[in-house]
Image 1 (tube, rainbow, N blue to C red):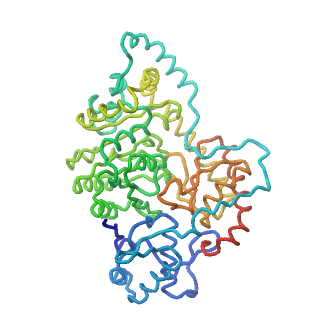
Image 2 (image 1 turned 30 degrees about the vertical axis):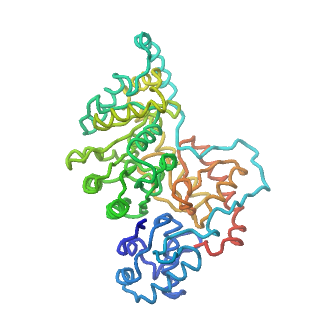
Image 3 (image 1 turned 180 degrees about the horizontal axis):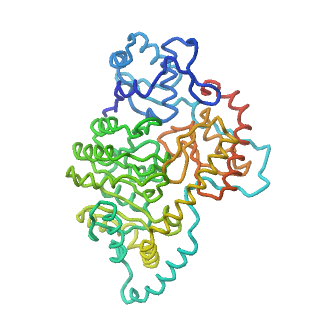
Length: 496
């Protein structure tokens, strides 16, 4: 079986100023005044940091010593020594007659640290879900209107595998208004976006197929990929500059012959980043050139906070002659309890999906579909109110982080519902296990990655009331402080 190999030029770029940069205790980069490590050790530490941050996926091969020495302008002896260090520490696994592959050593995996000396005296604030409470008045009005409209649908069996015509027309109109002409026969209504992902993967992939993903990514999509027996191929999201490594996506698609890609270019979950228009055009070209079906997850598209996103990726597919599949949902924009999602695809794929759906269910709730249709009629007013709330809560979360966790770093989300926080040490799972005792629940970074990546990250949504966000951050800071002695004692090699 062929092993995917990292490109030496891409690795050199991601390493950045690895020769002269060190990190202080807060995790912030600063230039050292004099080198304190030999070059081979500094290079090994730089690669190790990229592995922990999820920017080098597990299971891939590092570039050959010759290629990396040329890209970094170093001797092959230095590269050989660095790779030897990584093997000794468990970050490279060597097999006879095969290329060494990237791994995490046992000591770097979640160690189960749990502080039990304190129990929360107040309510535990659940920060593990990036979802808002419903807009009560709008939701009640929508369901009241749906109840009045329901009698017209009671004379038949009520099972619509592709959804009610009235809702599909409304969804198609929203796409058209965003610059992507769409007709009703290109839309299928599903019971949430999660069902849309599962239906598409079940129809488009077979066990053992590769599915290319941006990394980190939505945890339930990872689970859906695993459930159908496919294998995720992660391409890291970069923290600086252009977040999507389009050269890496093209290279990974070619090397792994991925049949499908699942991407979140609109206010990416969990990082909040947004792919620019030229990147969308290139992504469409990559899908065409590699004969890869691109599934674009737009569940966050309406939740822009600083500026509206560029046109849908599928609109660039029309230019390049590529059929791009788009999924969306009412759950993030309106309410998680409204289990309405949709798929936009060519009519032939919609027909195939309808045939596959019988193994899951026979259609989506008529009442929920009708309610979603009424919400879409007044979508702009409702969504603007939601965006105002999210902007206020994003500010509240950032203020709380500045007060309680000033050493943690992040890039401000331009949309979506969460911040992707970088911790000074790779203890995300230990922190998530500890913090409930202090009054909060968090989603650990490895939930969003493949095979233990992102122990230096944690997702923190800004979907709750400002007072709750402040309390959750305070609880997180207390839990992290309680972990500090254990981190120093048990993971000295992992504190950067």
